[in-house]
Image (cartoon, rainbow, N blue to C red):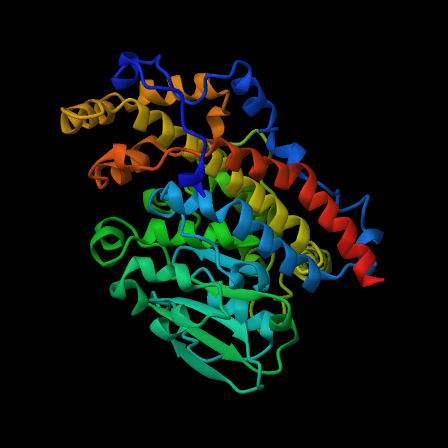
Length: 452
């Protein structure tokens, strides 16, 4: 654990407030090693889905995830607890976070067809369903498969306490949110044997979004987005306006851009000429919201339990059918790609954890040993952007892995004394890097042999 670390180099006067000092980073070249241990995100894909498709034919997922949980508990969890990573970012992962089925998060303004989309996938109604032109879904609803084949509603508090479900982290949002959380267990639904669907309240406009909800909606969405395997953002072909609140919600999805799929729903209700104009308008608006050099893929369709309207002709119907089939094919592939996605998500978490550990270590070393701690911590908070840059350069970290400045400052305000953090055990950070460099690739090979 961090308390068993080798002692840092003796403190010097510079350690109390300057950028130079006798920190435990004394060995030359350590920054370079740290930088080398943090490769770019695209290099974290240990296995290409196309190249290694056959590899997973005999892959033992149960064995793999059981061993991956042990690696996380041994290599990452001690660092998370010592650095209070859960207070600054996300709480520690539990067994259910590894064993959970792939999760699909549905977002959009009210009455765009999110709940109807789920019903069309299931081919039937489900517990807790409410559909209408007004804002009907006023809660987060996790639609899951039922182990005993019975349909039931699970209250939010009970759902968050179940050890076999990945929702324990939601308890941190308080009772006000848990009252707006609900589970729906559906029996005999093939698609729910492989995925969990999460319906969300429609994003409201203006003060209704801020004042009408007594919980932090953007933070809850971010929590679900981090754990989701696909995020479906839905738009109605008849109302394309992207409110400031929806823009802020989409902006919060930026770290998870690879998971986002945009659906233009009710596309059979407009003529082909109108659809062309609507599609162009949506792409223009998305270009202003989604700050990405890549073009956003938009799926056209009409996701409800009625046949496609025939007013647009056979070619129009064929287009919408093919678009729907493309999206459903991606949904069906989620379980097959779950291993790769879990590894990449864990790798992203490890990079953030590494930056967090060095950041806390750096700030701790700027604190005086005896007197003036409160004043020193106030100055650190006021000059946090400069300290971010200094920490990044000193330890050779990647600036893109640093936390949001304002969110980190808000969490840091709640820490009474930075000097109370334990010393950073750099050997533990090195072991975590080894986990992704050698342990996980080796585990993948063993899981393949284990499944044959």
